[in-house]
Amino acid sequence: MTAEKYDVVIIGGGINGVGVAQAAAAMGYSVLLLEKNAQLALETSGRSSKLIHGGLRYLESLEFSLVRESLKERELLLKLAPDLVRLQTFNIPVYNDTSRSALTLRLGLSLYALFAGLNKKHFYHQVKSVNWSELDGLQTKNLKTVFQYSDAQTDDTALTRAVMASAIGLGAECQCEAEFVRANVDKDKVTIQYQKNGVLKTVTTSALVNASGPWVCPVNKRIFPQSTILKPDLIQGSHLLVKTAISQAYYLEAPQDKRAVFLLPWKSHALLGTTEHVYQGDPVGMHVLDEEKNYLLKVYEHYFPEHEQELLATTTGCRVLLPAGASLSKRSREIHFEVDDAMQPRVISIVGGKLTVYRQTAIKIMSVLRKTLPVKKVIADTARLKLTPID
Image (cartoon, rainbow, N blue to C red; front, side, top):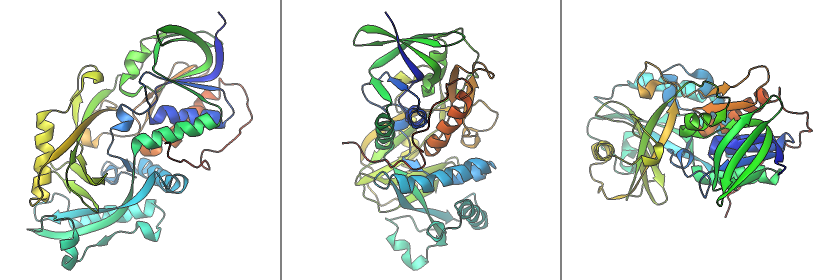
């Protein structure tokens, strides 16, 4: 049987996978994306904190380039996807025992605004004490000041599907419930087998992108000859959906360990998260732990003591971080690529990543793969492609 041929095949239907599909299709390449689940973004990309942001806390670890790139992409997505990405007001309360001083936060927010281009809508200000009563019942005992700034919020699942729809509009193909089986890498092509509806199918491609997120290493083991990739840490992060209506978002410091925790408006209720701890095993078996629930509910009770704690739902996802000596909250969120052959790349694996910069991640991947791919006529610019929700 003669296999179908593609320029690029992508394994994984999360935000990075669909981002690469869009970028490759926009450059004129034939594209096939394989997703093992029945729908896109059912794993990590659909279980995030729903933020399109620069990462204010990344300034503490001096990740200036990542923050600057993220803020640039935030601004672009606000224009390209106004029905999916919107500005949200965030509040940072400062108490007598808050570890970061008002001066430190002022400097960080000033730098954040500078990296965002000093647009007036992104300036921060202090909330007057006479207006504290408007902050959704925030604890005011020992409250010294409240800083207010803007960032962006999204429906991560809807955004992922909208990017894939854009890629399909450019000619890309998407196969869900398609389980990757194996790939053989030759000098001039990659032969891929996947299973769909109980049938084993074969395709060939000039380049293969492993965008399987937490499964990046298991997928790599099914690509022959095998290339060595840096084994990342899998980080479990959980969120709680709490039955309460809030009008603004809150950037909170967990009293237990001083980590950053977000409380965000979400579908008439509030989303609270996230946690962070190293996960061992297959992410399929991941579930929210009682200790995570208790941790987040204590944060919620600490800052909003008058709110009822009715828990509506929980979600947990698995992020991928490069191993390092730093604490989890301080580890770099920069993305890392593993390439089988720097001179003639056929297989590239994505390790890590950030929802906000998916488009730039895809551009960087395609820049690497152009060494191998045939010359094609560019048909679109992803920086100009509008993204709309899919019914």
